[in-house]
Image (cartoon, rainbow, N blue to C red; front, side, top):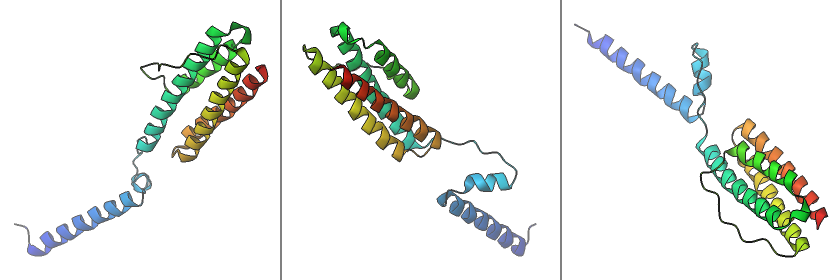
Length: 161
């Protein structure tokens, strides 16, 4: 039979361990604690990062649809490299299951190029903001890189107008 002293000691040790784990979880130190005792933790993705990826994928797919529609309408703009870049960006954040409906590009080639440049600039600004909100350094780097690439595309397409 267990003595009262042993029972109280075990209960106190269990409560202290639970409190320590709770404090470590609250302070986001569970991974460090696991490493301290010899375990290698598996990182879980941040839910906020997951939402950023879903949002970025939807935005990139919409942009890809706009680029493809403009390229199909205005073959003289030679947008094949922009279609390729936009496709790579959409793949980098995951291609969404549904391609969005986009408005028909303007019939005037200069206006279509200006509208496309504006869409690229808007996407660049959004990806830069997403990079600032990302918890994962890897995701922040991908989004910041995408933002820079989108900004370059905005400038290059703007020069076509």
